[in-house]
Image (cartoon, rainbow, N blue to C red; front, side):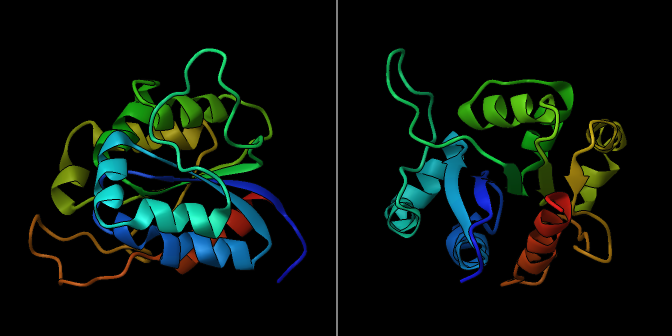
Amino acid sequence: MEKRRGVLGVVGTGAGGVEALRTGLVEPALARGWQVAVTLTPTAGRWLRAIGEVDRLEKATGLPVRDEPRLPGEARPHPPVDCYVVAPASANTVAKLAAGIADNQVLTQVGEAIGTLDLPVVVFPRVNAAHARHPAWKRNIAALREADVRLVYGPDVWSLYEPREAPSGRELPWQAVLDAIDDAVK
């Protein structure tokens, strides 16, 4: 294991591939020396709880997985984060981050991080060609870039297919995401 790097806030959304979050991103980040704190959107939390992944994530990280806000007076379940990574990020999450909407725990945390000085944020938009053609998409991507969010995005990283036409079993670009994290914290 490498020397300890700090706390990586791993955020998963209701996008295809989130079911591999532990094996694709969390365990490799742990092996690179990160302490990992996982937060999920409500949809991702529901999906991963249904297949037993929330328990596996908690066992791997030693921290609770968050998918809803804490109650007033409750202790913070995660230590302060040194870098956030949103992977996979649904088109909905990307649009809300770009617009500054904070209507769930993920969007509240990451939206605040985007506005925090010297707190890197990495986002992998897991979208298809139809999402990318939507008139708002270019503005959303531009808004995140303007905010210094590091995007893992483009045809060299993730080819966009028409809805329901992507090859089945396509693995997310976890290595590119991990490399973007490394670049963000240099």
